[in-house]
Every structure is written in structure tokens, then in C-alpha cells.
Amino acid sequence: MTEPKTFDVVLFPDPVLRKETEDVVAFDDDLRATVAGMLERMFESHGVGLAAPQVGLTQRLFVLNDEGDREKPERNMAIINPTIKKTFGKKTKHEEGCLSLPGVDAEITRPDGCLVHGFDEHGNEFEKEFTGFLSRIIQHEYDHLQGVLLVDRMTPADKMRNRDAVEELKDQYRQFKAAQAREAAAEAESNGEAKA
Image (cartoon, rainbow, N blue to C red; front, side, top):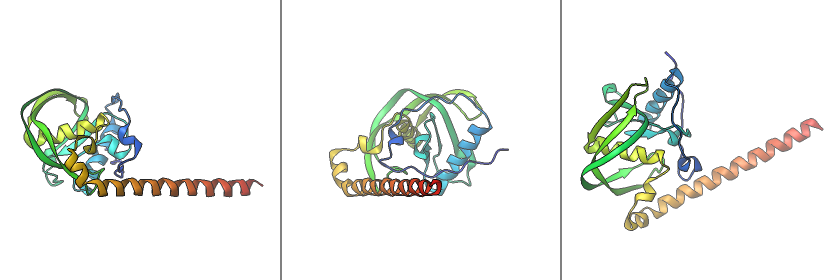
């Protein structure tokens, strides 16, 4: 068996979270290592779902465990190349958080159920209805594959309530990019001196 890949969670507002995702074409050991690594990262981060863009990948896949419990691997699920064919049931509001937006939560309105077509990590095709919390997780992770984030679904009141946390994430990202640019400039300068 291939070792799980290692991932870090990509934080808002990194542009990869908005990129268009592409269908997975190879259901192979590399994909299964990706799925295993994403599940590991999800558990390490105390989440119940994680989409590929959240670990810097542009593949159409997400993983979940609706109990967030690594001791219950029977609850693990990978959904590859998903399509939500329809939603159904009463629309309800529930609080949601996101691993890519730490410190941010909002009451999001979603339908109770969804019909999903997709594949597991072995390439087995399925079409299944999900309801309740499992459906909510799937709809949230599916949003990530469409480049839609929690901040896009917030009510004006939730946007106001989370404004400071969102601004702090933006500031941290700017500082990170500035540090990367300084490191790249220093490396380029030292490479230039080494060639002289």
C-alpha cells in the first residue's frame, strides 16, 4: 500500500481556493494516497470534511467523516468527481465552520438532502441520497470544488460579526506573501553573487 501524502490546510484568501477544479482521471494508488493524506489532515485539524482545494489541489474530490472520529474508519468517505444532481427537503439554518477559515463561523441555510452522483477512490460509481448533517457536509465540500466559500454564503449579519477574523486572515496572507517575496529576492541575490 502507498503511504498517505502529507498536506497542510490552505487558508483564506489563497487564490487556489477559488480555482476551477478538474475531474480526476486516474483511480490509482496515487489517488488513494491523496485520499488517505486528506483524511489524515482532516482528523489532525479536527474537521469533518476536507476538499482538495483546501490542500492546494485542483482535483474534484473531497473526503469526510461525519463524526470526525479517526477511530471510526467505517464513517470515512471519499467522493470523487461529484455532481449534486438535486437538493430536496426543508431548508434549514445551521452553524458551519471551515478549516480554511479558522475562527470564522456562520449560520448557513441549506436544503436537508441532496442526491449525489460520483465515484469512490477505487473508481466505483454511485448515486445516493444523503440527508441531515451528512448532506450539509457534502454541500459545504461541494461548494469548495466550485470555488464557493463560507464567506460567500454568509448573511450580512454574519459578515459583520466575522469581519475582524476575516481581515486578520487577509493580513496574515499578505504578510506570508511578502515574506515569500523577500526570501525569493534574497535567494536570487545570493545566486547572482554565487555566479559572479
